[in-house]
Length: 90
Image (cartoon, rainbow, N blue to C red; front, side, top):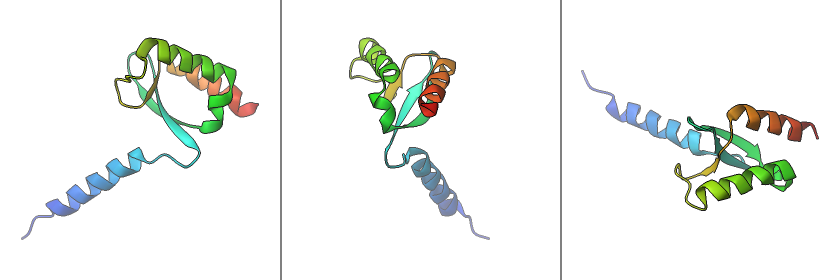
């Protein structure tokens, strides 16, 4: 009876890769004040003034040294979702 560890390792590696994939024309951001959650948003959001305000806050708080390694937005997840809904409708 053999072990199937290589298959499990391959599945974990494939799962990790799928989490890191961001569709073309989108950017991953981490949002939240205490617990940061990953959101993928269209790059076009970067041109909107409300999103640029959030980016300015991120620059003030973190500079270019983001603790998670990705772009971190320092606001509540509820505020971020509300803002992206407004941007999506416009």
